[in-house]
Amino acid sequence: MLGVARNPRCFFYFLCLLYLLYLPASALADEIRLKDGTKIIGTIVGYEENSFKVRTSYGFALIRKDKIAAIIPSEAVAEAKPETKPEAKPEPKNEAAKETKKPVSPSAAQPVPQPAASTAAQPPAVTPAVKKDTVANPAGATASPAPQPVAKTEPPPVPKPSEPVIRDEVIGNLYINHTYGFHMFKPPRWEMIEDARKTMPTAVVAMGTGDETTLLVVGREPAKTTLEAHAAATERQLREIYEHYRQISEQRTQVAGLAAIERRYRGTADGHDWSGIVLTLVRGTDVYTLLGMTWADSDLIQIQENVIARTISSLEFTK
Image (cartoon, rainbow, N blue to C red; front, side, top):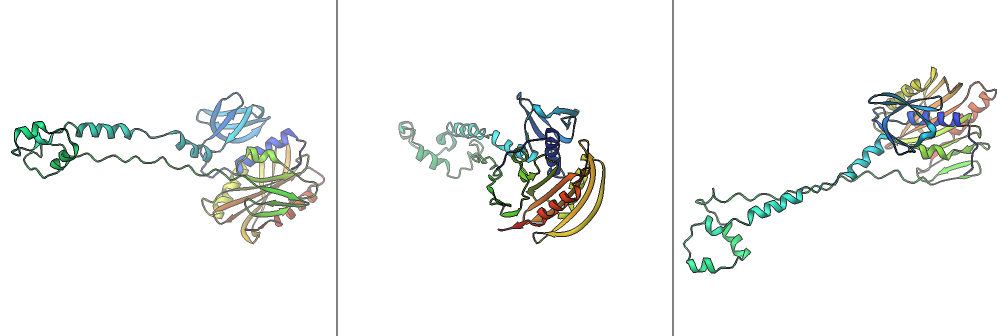
């Protein structure tokens, strides 16, 4: 993979945009880990002045990007919690049940005429005592407590498997993703953006120009509702991200032979006017979001829009 000279403001704005796009519609609070060890629970709602705007239970907070070590999505936090709660309390109850059973004397509970010598001389053999205690005894029913059922210890819930390690490669102008089984065109002068994947677990691949004024990302997450609902949730998040957001067009189309909803938009963010296209499609149990955007205040806007469109239309699933 190629290294990239970063435009810090553009790059971190891009990461914030990705993060908001791939949050589920009913997102829970996420965990933001700072470099000093502090953990903040909240939801990122914007990016301004080199800082992430986070909605927390006590209000909004601005967190500088250079203070953040990692952002853990809500699903990853929820899945990790069951592992930290081992349930080991039923064991003492079982011991207590055994202790209460042990003092119960079968001879005291059953007035069966037995020679005194045999009762006194009989060693504390467990097997005969258990057999005698299991014989029906109406007279001593109140004296002998009912056997307590042994409490079953439920195994801790098995955590969901983590996201698979993404295996991919670039051969010439072709990007190949072996993990999710698809390939697509990679423009000759575009470079892979590895940092986006490290920060955003839902980002399958991100690429763009070296100055990151033109960007494209493919994201994947489990499909939890209909195609229309996922597309609508994405647009709501776009409206929160951009100032002066305006939708240019919306249409149903096909990408890789699958039904998709395409929206084109304009909006202002990070001091620039952006031209963007976002497509949402469902394949099996997964929903894919393809987001392409470029500076609209650039002389190359039409060229870059055409490059983004060609790259998106080249997507093909191989398995």
